Each structure stands twice: as structure tokens, then as C-alpha cells.
Amino acid sequence: MWRACRWRCGDPRRDSVAEGAKQWIDLADASSLAEGKGRSVEANGRRFALFHVGGAFHAIDDHCPHRGAPLGAGWVENGEVFCPLHGWAFDVATGACSTRPDRPVKYYPTKVEDGRVWMAME
Ligand code: FES
Image (cartoon, rainbow, N blue to C red):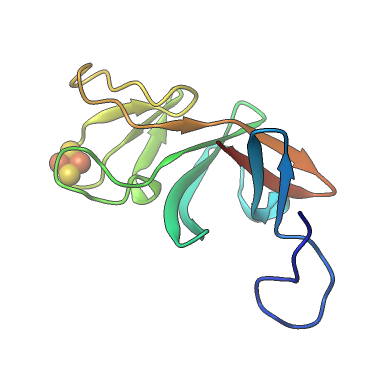
């Protein structure tokens, strides 16, 4: 499905596309996130943590399962993001939590098209 720009500026640029059971959401300009960095982004009324690590983009839930801190504000080291509040560590490429393996966060597949980072939701 094609929709108008999320900023309602009249730009016919798409911000979400349905593809089979997946819905691809436009998350960010790929050039806006430097290698080794992450940040919180809002899409579809929710917040996600987006990371640029090892030349690839990764999206996970932004909400830390411990006390809800934004994981996008954490620091990234060796493929993991450390929660800014108490330091739980999450693999940015899977959402697995190495501090508490029973408390992972959801990981979302991503792709880059036309300089934009897209995230798949089902
Ligand atoms: S809120 Fe994330 S580790 Fe405590």
C-alpha cells in the first residue's frame, strides 16, 4: 500500500509498503546514522531502536524489558547495545539479552532502498 508522506507535505514518497504478510516501514535516512551508532526512532506510533553496526542496519524494540529505558540511547560495543539506565546488554542483530537471556527484545528485519532504512513488521 502506498500512502502520502508522514509529514503530510504533499510529497508522494511512500512511508510504508505492504509486501505479502510483511509491512515495510520507512524508518530513517541511511546517511543519518553513523557506523557504530544507534538512536530511537518513531514509526507507526511506536518507538524502535535503530543501529548501524558492521555495515548493516538493525532494528529492535526501543523499550528495555527491565525498566523501560530507551535502548536507542544506549552505547554500542561489539555488536551489543547497553541500556543507558542499568546496562543490560542486547545483541543488536537478534535482540537477545546476554545479561538476562530470558528477557530478549523483538528484532525486526531491515533493508536499505533508495538511501532509506526500512523495517519489516508482520
Ligand atoms: S532499564 Fe534497561 S537495564 Fe534497567
